[in-house]
Length: 214
Image 1 (tube, one colour):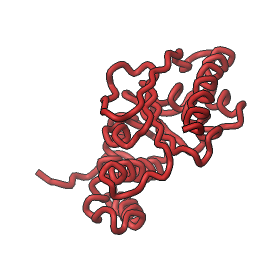
Image 2 (spheres, rainbow, N blue to C red; image 1 turned 180 degrees about the horizontal axis):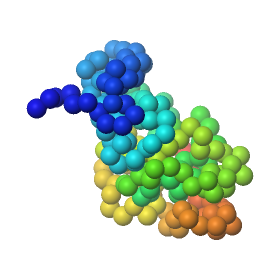
Image 3 (cartoon, one colour; image 1 turned 180 degrees about the vertical axis):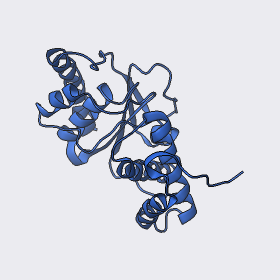
Image 4 (cartoon, rainbow, N blue to C red; image 1 turned 135 degrees about the vertical axis):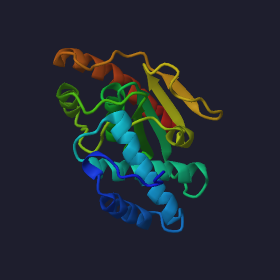
């Protein structure tokens, strides 16, 4: 069996993945071997196409996702420091609640935290209504995308906030786990999404204040 089968879809040419891996490996010089980086890049691509069904900007999000995963693994293994709090938001589709929370915390807390988000069953993209509601509070989703939940980002997190994803998120000792009972905004009207956003905003502001006090 071919250990490196041709990849389907946008990145069918392995040369594209190789270029992504070369750029990513340069960021992790002295942290991970080139072989490890190449493996993570291919794993990231497969995870996105299999789970998140990303259809646009696939090369870009593959590079971002691989970089995020490698950073998380390096932090867990002590290869990279954790200069800021690591907060992870998890919901089912990673296209509504967790993305709203992540965008608002980034906007409010700035350099105090590094924020990640993920989904147990990621969607293919964002609902424009969700994006609009987030923008109304001065935050945005421009740099983010739905992505699958991985063990690495959970292990790297200091605070894990779940929203309607059941038991999909693994539990590790020494972390703070919060479960926020908020409705799923996907498919809702703008006013309904605003109400959900506001409910999340109250919780995010409380969390940001607690992290600052810590």
